[in-house]
Image (cartoon, rainbow over all chains, first blue to last red; front, top):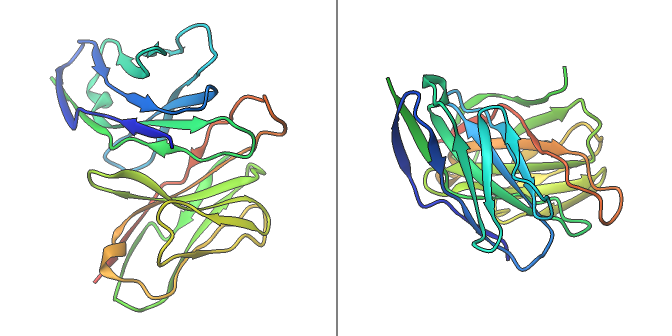
Length: 116
Length: 118
């Protein structure tokens, strides 16, 4: 069974610093996808970045990058040059990519607070 | 605009009074799903649907019903709500993989429905 672990319930980071949000996962399927979502205080879930298990390079999307270490089963989100608007809850999620499975399994989230 | 909509956004009700939370998407997605979000537990899947008339249980289906009579709509029904169903509910949708080996598709979420059962 797939499992996602986020061990940081909360983080405080100074504005303009880089921040790394930890995510480890467990799966027996060799083909899987890893996602990060942002949930601001308004409540909506915003897709940030995706990494496939067979992707050769780490995913990047603007200030977001995913530090994918397959052997360690970790998929940490790195936010460069943090901004006040980055304050939110962040969820790591995984989907095993066998045919017929569309289920996302989520971690418990990390609440990030950016300090001015 | 491509989107997933949910109604109502906020609801306070009493134990035992049947309610329905609607979910609609305009992206022609095959896959739709309901999640509930509780503090310290993340999002957990309640029910999902692979296509019209095809639904199945997720991880926490007790106390909920769903139906998928049209591709765009996937309502969540609480026949007899109880206080432990107080939660934030999300509907999500995505395309399905058309064949084995195809990459995955991003799931898009609705704005959420905050439900309080007294």
